[in-house]
Every structure is written in C-alpha cells, then in structure tokens.
Length: 276
Picture 1 (cartoon, rainbow, N blue to C red):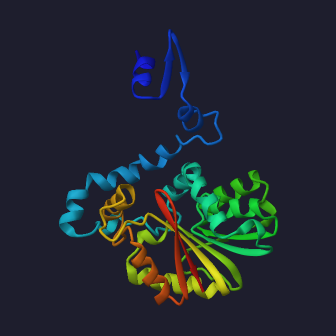
Picture 2 (picture 1 turned 180 degrees about the vertical axis):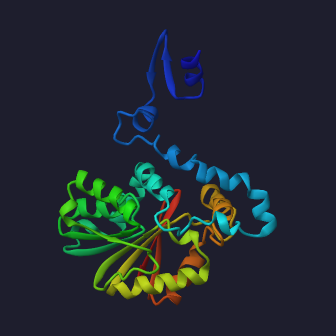
Picture 3 (picture 1 turned 90 degrees about the vertical axis):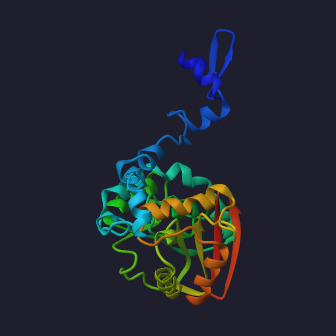
C-alpha cells in the first residue's frame, strides 16, 4: 500500500509487481546519493523554525517578533549549527552559480571572505574550482567547526581559515578580492544592511566584488512565487527582515560604497554582484 501510494504521488515507478526509484527520487531522496536533500528537513522543520509560525498571528498584530524570540544574531545559537549540518546539499546549485558568475576557474589567485559561512559550501566550491583560492570563513565558532569539517572532506582544508565571531563586530581585515554574503541580508532591515555592506566594502580591494545571494522578488512583491513568499518567513522569524527586490539590494550596495551592481538568476534565488 505504501509503495503504491508513493507511485501515485511520483516518488516510485511501478512496473507489474516491481517498484523502482524515479530519477529525481534516486538523486535527491536516497541517503546513498551525494546530492541527498533529506537533511534539509532537520532545519526547515525544526522546533526553532516551526515555532515562528505557531505565533505568527501575534507577530502580525505586534508588527514584529517578540524580543525573546530573536535568535538571528544570538551568540553560538545551536540552531545555526543545525542549519550548517542540514542545508549544504540545497545550497550546492547556487554555489556553482556563484563560481560561474565570478569566473573563478580562470581568475588566478583570489582571497575570499565568506561571511556567515555556515556549512562553508560557497567558499569551498570556489576553492575546489581554483587551487589558488584562499578562503577566510566568518561565523560563530561552533558553526565554523562544521565548515572546517566540510572543507577538509572537500580537500581544501589547507586553504580554509577560520575567523570566529559576530559578523557585525569581527575585524575582517582588508585586501580581499571576493566577499560572499549568502542568505544573510534578508534577516535585517535596510539601515542595518547598508552599514554592514559598508563594512564588507572596506574589506575588499578596489575592484573587488561582493557576491550576495538572496530570494529576490519582482517589484510587485508577489512574483515569482517562491522568492516573494519568502518574506513571510522573515516576518515570522526576524525583527525586521524581508525579501528584498533587486532595486532594494542595488540601492543598499550603492549607498554602502559599491560602484556597480548586477544580477544573475539561479532560480529560485538570485546572485547579486556588487563591485567596489
């Protein structure tokens, strides 16, 4: 009965009395697959995430989350370790997209600053594509241990440096060619993001680039569906976050001191390249 049901909804294929995995199931839902996505449920369906929607009515009435529920920048919050261990598989396609958008393979030596690195996939992919890439990863210490493990497994551990601390407070240093700002800006309001991106710009060389990955809705803010719907997640779980349009992100980057801003879609997300 279970196998028949799974065939009805498209997770199995049935021929006579024999069942087999569909192509998508074999690639994304088999624990034997290197691109298994099942771990994402460990974070997306976690108590921390689901609790936000349990109190959504109160959040709407209040206009923001209760202060006690603000875990966005809580020091060494275990939910971000869970995020780092769960979400890397889902982020591999945009990581490849960022590598392509930056032309990393043929770029020569690059110093890369990976801010709020989490699982580390974005910086790790750049290092895999180019043996002359060196990555400095910023995040809470416990989260960076996950990124370090992943870097070692990927064979780039010797070029992967850890910089633990609060992304808003830690000293990045200077002279970076690339800064990765992935799935980060949506947690904060515009003014906070301008200040933060100004700090990012200060860490880059002249001509350096910040690669920003976000869910970017159209100006109507109701399309495309997945990017536009992401704003409700920010309403439920952050004090003042949002899904920003390209116009929003462009104005944030320009006000922060970047000179040009371009976008490249990697559905359902968008890579925004801001050049200093």
